[in-house]
Length: 129
Image (tube, rainbow, N blue to C red; front, side, top):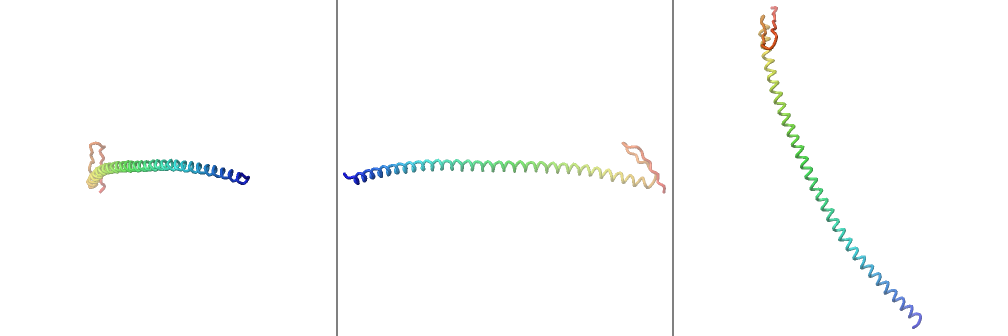
């Protein structure tokens, strides 16, 4: 065998060995890529599930807040209405008492009369007419 043939033989061996290494590396890369793809897919599914869960929780929290706020507003409105009615009743009584006092005053201004209330001092008005 001549030197060229030996070189050719050795080069062919190296090429075949290199091709074998490249093929093995390619297969390893394909396998690792597939594993990474599966892991990434699972991660995406988990993340999507977590996001969906958080969205659902957020919706529930918003609904609860809206319900709580609506309840508080209704409670406040009821309290305002009740207090308004209470004060209107008191105001009506006060206005009635004022009307009674005006009537008594008007009668008493027509002549000398005593204004006599059970709980108050007696006031005598003298009319100068």
